[in-house]
Amino acid sequence: MPQRPRPTREEIRTAKGRTVTDLIAPDLLVLFCGINPGLYSGAVGHHFARPGNRFWPVLHAAGFTGRLLSPFDEHELLERGYGITNLVERATAGADDLSRAEIVEGSRRLAAKVLRYRPRFVAVLGIGAYRIAFGRPKATIGRQDLSIGPTRLWALPSPSGLNAHYRFAELVSLYDELRLAAVEE
Image (tube, rainbow, N blue to C red; front, side, top):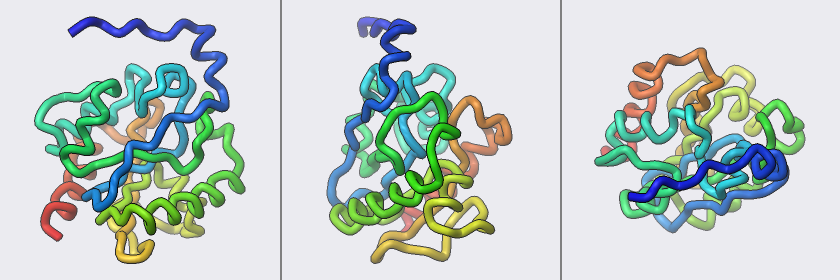
């Protein structure tokens, strides 16, 4: 497989405000919802693309995928019943660049997508963003008591390499709980 070139610093810098197309289809098992695309993802047009982001290795280790996918293989998730969207569509250098109002508005857009596409679970990847988006300041990681229509909400830690609060094995265990719930229900 040919190596894809990395974006240049200029391409990353100018990715501010770009969007990454949702990976979504009706009746998914899980719709993963990131906070927003980073500049690297904005530059290449694929979700969780920055080297060092643990999303793809965690998905594989937790059993969501049969092999380690790269961001450029993201379409293969749909075949397995999984998709990706974001609370806020615009790419930024970090989630700290987002306002509370943007995150809350993102939850409204997410709800509209969920009602249209009807995934079994939505996993918000970032507990802080989940708390803000859904007005649940005391929410903890895992299955939530909130749903959107019949879709159950789940909060998981952000897989960003910047999120040093969770070791890889902890992320795998938490994501695996969601996978098991999604296939059992």
